[in-house]
Image 1: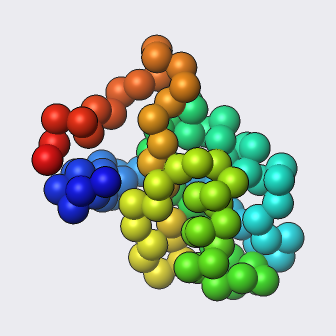
Image 2: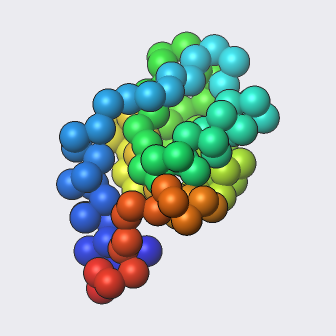
Length: 100
């Protein structure tokens, strides 16, 4: 992902509400499955990491990225923004391929 694509996605993410919170149980297979479903529906999501999470923000974001196959667009404070092209063609609304 190029820096221009990342900047474009950051701009889109500013308007998004947080749809997931990760707390004391950390990143589990169930959380990754739910995040994958959300990414297939929306492509761009925002997650909040609670202070009770056993791992720090960088570790948590890399675990989520590995578990879902998504790209980490940004980590800011205790929030993570993820992007993944939807498997369902009807849900593909964000096209970053033309941004270089």
